[in-house]
Image 1: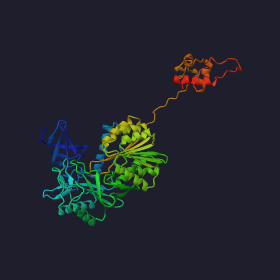
Image 2: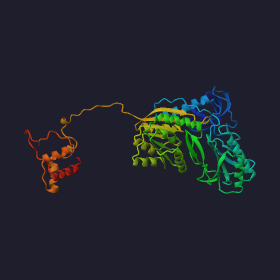
Image 3: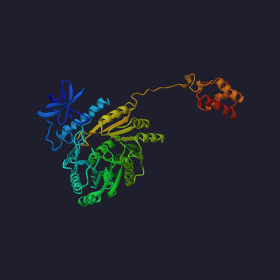
Image 4: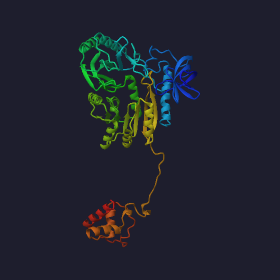
Length: 543
């Protein structure tokens, strides 16, 4: 196989990493974007590596039964949607197979994977958008999405995954920026001001946050820009400038300047009022998140006396949605703004049983262990990289009986579940959930429980048959006598030693020091000698 070869092959699978079609030719794996399982294609080889090739579909000779016409005109150029060209039913099957492959190959876990639960609406479901802004061919600002594997911006008038109003706001902001001669950011030179248009919308309340990412806080016509935005879109309840001067791929800088409003919006998720700031983690699919959390909550089978630990809690939405079923809730999150939002959210609910810790998960886990905090249930919703070993070790050390893992990355979920299974847990349920329709992403809820021993062995011990107990074996009567005499020049009898040993529950055989005569009165060890014998027993670690 060499570059520019043209071959004919059938697409037999999808790659987990990016949803590309997979063909095989002479035992060589070929990744082909924008193809469907069952397609028979004419493929041009554009890249050859030692273990695989990358190809481009030049012609579909026979289309897959799953293939449909994409509803988005830029789906091939944009890097956002991977499955616009196949039916939604086949997308759900593909995502189940992604999860199944990970848990079999990476996790080595033998547990049936449920069918992927579908999203109620596969379009217009997102409540968050981050549009890069750059200098277009005419020197004016344009917004859109990055092309696959690049930072080339593809202009987009209407993304079908976003609310219509997001596209209207972004178009207005871009047009106004151009009219006011506010320069867009040039990634190559590092010049310009406007970098991203960042929008969030509260599904229930309808509130909208506009955050414009800029290289500086103050610039010419800044106030005019926001006055015009406020007049045009009264549903934008807060507007913010985020300052990002770094030459990096990071979208948000650390500093925010609130232009108007309170700097946050409020949404209601699972009956919980949630405060959302620009840096807060919040699920981008509101309705899907409610369904996802309900699956996790049901898998834990929470009762009123449960103590719940919510790791990677963000603004607290998962734990707070379960707080009515537990006696105590502790949430852990590393982003300070998110923790503050979580505390506000708990206060709004009037919860007295919720505590939130701002720390890295493994550090917080260590702190809770030192506090002897003993949760009965844990829910973890880690980032794509999964849980670190220290966090998992802490959960294992807490001897938590039931655990629900919510994961946006089946590969790391399988890896982490394998580790837990090697340390006393078993997987009871694997439920894929399509939180992000038309994209390659899939959420997974995994239910884990502490294993019970497979067998029990009943042992009956007759203590009279034992020769010596482990405590007795540590020192003989003569050694105890010698210790006391050497240190205090006091003699004690074997009878006195036996009496003190019996006092402390050290099991004895029939003592040869006991009198064999009926009704014989035994002398009792004096209190001062009791103390000396006890000291000797402690020295020999017998008490």
